[in-house]
Image 1 (cartoon, rainbow, N blue to C red):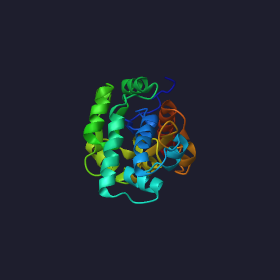
Image 2: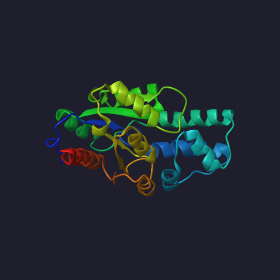
Image 3: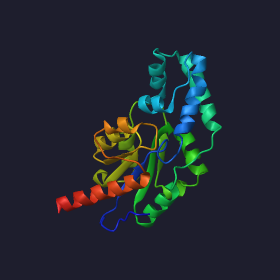
Image 4: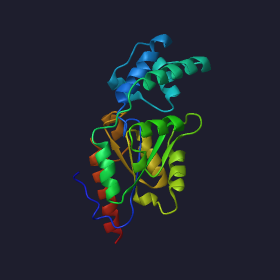
Length: 232
């Protein structure tokens, strides 16, 4: 590891995203989507188009691709087929994730995970790759699909406890919405280019964009240190 927390005097929290961030699954999501499109009258799409147009909730992504609104029955069948493909693919972490998490824990950085993936599925996937014990809290979506992570992030930080300061919290994710959510609670957003959205699309968020998770940590910690110095 090439980052240090020696210059950080008070507790720092990192809230990680899951799909496309800690989990290396952009190819899995593309394969699952493309497996369902022919039955809906659409040809498979490229990774470039997926990363340029992906959105949440996923049902709205289908509607945009197809140029029409799916019926509830069509959506139910497509969603089930999508999840069946995902279930057949192994859960893989991004390269070096375990080492980054261990390094941060050893230096007193608190870490948690927040995703809009269904909660029970998320908990199972995180357990499968053996990183549950490195995280203070793992929260997924417990209700219907939603268009933004912002309300969930506010609840997540509150559930982490009163000593978690949003201004000393780094949110690391792979979508513009991760940045929007972070800014809505006063946290520090850092986006990376390994996941579900293209670098060009991430740049529209107006927040830092890096190419690796380690760089995201380095930049987030540096931002907190700079803010501390400016306030001194």
